Structures are given as structure tokens and as C-alpha cells.
Length: 44
Ligand SMILES: [Zn+2]
Image 1 (cartoon, rainbow, N blue to C red):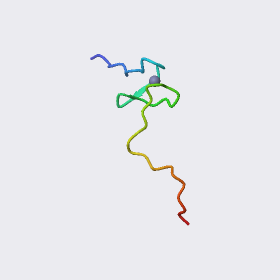
Image 2: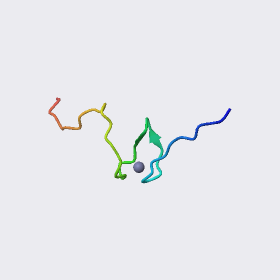
Image 3: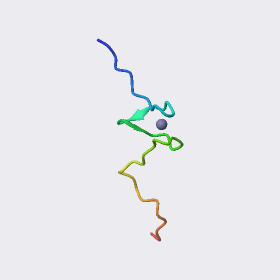
Image 4: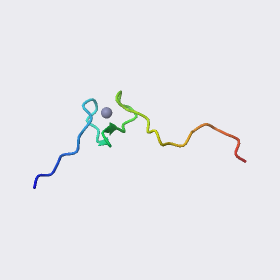
């Protein structure tokens, strides 16, 4: 059996997660959709 090499970003050669580059410094970086809003809310 052959092991499938993980795809890497063609821009920064970073490891792709779910086919997306997770390198914030990469131009192909896409913010994850499921993320908590970083808006500073008064949640006291
Ligand atoms: Zn990249």
C-alpha cells in the first residue's frame, strides 16, 4: 500500500489542513469558518 503524501501549500509549502493552508502569513491562508468571534464584548 502506498501512503498518500499530505498536500502542501504551493505558496508557503505549509501543511494543508482539510485542503486549506493554515499559515496566517501565507497569501492563500483562509480563516476557518468555525471560529469564535474575537470581538471584544463586555461579557462581565
Ligand atoms: Zn500557504
